[in-house]
Length: 267
Length: 267
DNA sequence: GGCAACGTCG
DNA sequence: CGACGTTGCC
Image 1 (spheres, rainbow over the protein chains, first blue to last red):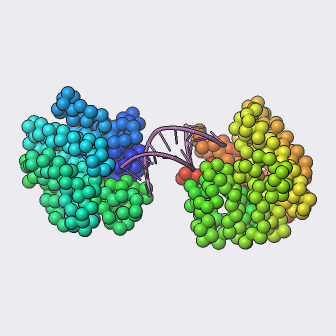
Image 2 (cartoon, chains in turn blue, yellow, purple, red; image 1 turned 180 degrees about the vertical axis):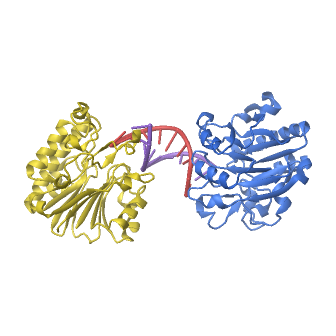
Image 3 (cartoon, each protein chain N blue to C red; image 1 turned 90 degrees about the vertical axis):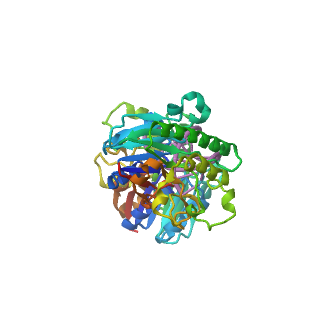
């Protein structure tokens, strides 16, 4: 099956891009982030017309995640609380950033990791706390079944090769999305639990990005970042067939600043 | 020469519609209303690239008029004040609604008449006061030369045949743009000075409109109003060759709610 | 109620 | 640059 992740930066503004893309790329599951819409206003009908079932967790203006699935989804778990219990979650489910399901025996998680704004800011602390809880969330999921696939907009470029800037640029460590603490959080909460970055199983070189800033004509100059990821648990590693980035939607008129990343699994 | 009038409802939002239309309809003069932009932000370069000289009188967000001319414009008169003197004008030039020039010996006036909001409102009174001053303005122009062509968005449908509603509908008299006082103002300040409605020289029947409300799918149902006009002075009457409405721009994506009206003069 | 302005945020 | 909320016009 093919699973795609795409931060659409408003599903209502991007509906035609999404439907066009799904017609060209009929993936089994599309994981959306930044839908920016309450559940009652989600453009369900248009996506159902394409044969997709929608599971949504949205809010007004900000954040919001959704799953578009060709198969009806038997279970949908919204927020960290659905797995960890609401007591442990505190305020970290207030923003709609987590939705999960099980498809073909694989636990699938769709995430919109907080951006963090600037190093040292309150939002940065929130991001690191959120990633802490993500670690516990994934640990719990791994205990319920070994095959776990986690995708989404992580707002973190783990290595310098994931950023257009020249390697070793000092600014990288001071930049949101590439600071040491953010990368350590990925190390601790994903890699140390055995997850691997599916894209890097197939493509070691630099120059592959999933996000380009709207400002400064970043896309035209290919000044991008690879911050949208698929992480897969050890039990799924052998099942990974391909992981690719489709740049074409980023080149359209009025695009999202992100573009889809597709994982193919032998499941 | 051909003179067109078009309320574009923001020249910046409608720039592509205007340039496309001018390529298809290379009129000698295009009179725009509701440009909604200050003069420094008017998209002059794109229109000059098409061979048009721009004379603009705009303001932020609201109103704004402009002349796009194939010929360089030797004189441009902005506001009532340019003709009447600022003393007589009071507050009626504060909004940018009047721009005038002379082309091929014809005095041409481009107007954006106040809408008036609702009968009896403060804006309604302003509209009627504005039309009073328009009468004096046109009287003065006629004294300087007999050939005067006045076009623009008048926000008045002079007769019931200019409205999609069934003739005699009582609501017409209570509706802004078709109230008795507005029609009387046209009578007094235009017709009584000898101006005639160029469109009605050629087309007596109903069912011809220049504006369709964005709401209630008015265009789809052809529930329109003819409120964009060309009025010509007696000396020009014999020079009028044709006056037509081009509905096509109203049918495009993201259109203005108005569509161009074209006057052809043997001048 | 549709559209486009502005200001704010990333 | 392009989301969104808000405001104002029609």
